[in-house]
Image (cartoon, rainbow, N blue to C red; front, side, top):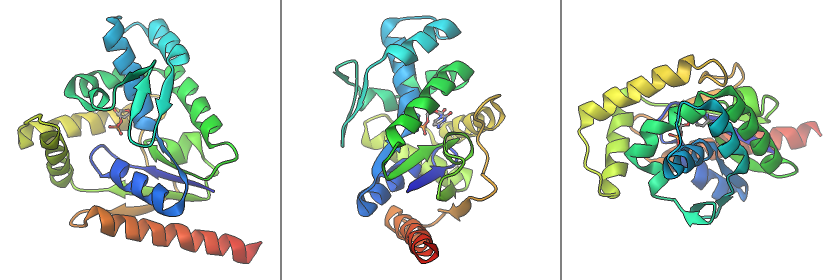
Length: 222
Ligand code: DC
């Protein structure tokens, strides 16, 4: 079974998608981390982020390993670095490139082949897995999303200003919603869950309930 979770930055997707996958015993695909890994590789190699051909080459040749609690890029542990503000500021160069997206979507489909997965990102229910059995879309108000991101960054020792963060999130929303390929939008058949005021456990409970009812619906129909 494929479960997709899409939504804007800071809606709490990564945390709950990871927990949901664990509860269901499914593989977890953090697709944002793939775009971040390409940006990280480009920053480390000091290449021109505007050079599409170089970015595509990097995407095709980088060795990205997803381990349960860490991400390795070409043998180096980049778990913290890919979430840093440097990578966050650079990641759109990778995400805006149609050929990079095409390659990463292919990889996502390979990773999901013959497996039960929870796949989280922006275009999972619309582009990568349009036939997914269960599509979820997480939303939250800009303030709540900025607050969550701030806590996350403070935990990593990166102090930030809430208003600045909210502005950056709105800029990313705009970019995510207007990119030529793979833009963020809710699939017509996705179920939207607004996470304002909910703890991550409460969100996971709600998502698990939706997935389990889909699973039992599928069993009844079979
Ligand atoms: O979810 P995140 O913040 O880790 O995502 C990093 C960037 O990658 C973000 O700018 C949106 C982009 N992205 C995307 O375009 N498509 C995806 N499936 C996942 C992320």
